[in-house]
Length: 349
Image (tube, rainbow, N blue to C red; front, side, top):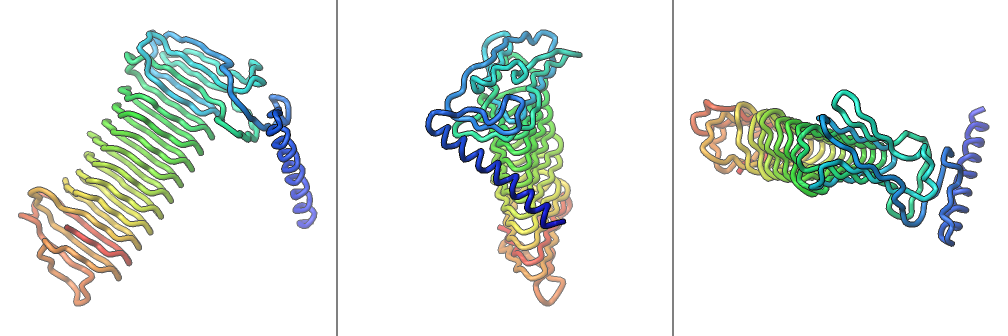
């Protein structure tokens, strides 16, 4: 029975592969036709895209903009105009009304969306996209969501709340982000943002790299990844949570109180200013940081098999193997720094 199932599955995927190969050859010879109708499952797209729909929308009484696409990428620009403009670029064959975006308003929210259709898309060039021009005077909330399409903000923005979510697409901004709350999430895509000024921040990716400029957060900041690395400028927050599993972390500086954890990647916090309590833990990666300014800290350091190097601290070891130590910086009364590692070294400058 199992052998029959595997054989049937192999035949199905073999047929799909042959169809894709046929369409690829036809496309390279000037075809680029759909494998099926617009409602089909699989299609092959080649060549230039066309503007298939454009709409200008008034934002009077609108305090929230919601943009949702499936495989389309989304590009957001700022405009000096008074209305928001939406443009859809797609293949000529996608001019069917069922494949075009729609817009609606309800309870102060404007929603722009393209109906979800399950199809396997194969592109030889730039994929379908939505281009959104938002007036510079707009100061409400903006939420953008895609499945496999990338999301890119081309201008510095100042909005109340910003939510950017993609399953497998890259998330990028060319300018700074200023908002009350920033929520960014992607599964397998990377996140590349400029400077951030916000009341709260949450940035999460499973397998993509996180690259940020300077991040200043009045409240809480959460930056986490599973297998992607972190490359961040100066991070300051009331409370921060920095988490990773297998990627390295490199910050120019960190200020505030919170938790830093990483399983197998290195941790480099740059210039560390402790406000309250900071706990840093890792398994196999080296931890590096520099204590700057006139700080008054109680420092606790523990490692299973890694070394401890802190040339400017008067360490007091609590064991005869040099694996557990404590130190006092200044009066030690203003904050606590806890450092723990399994096999990685801990280096304090």
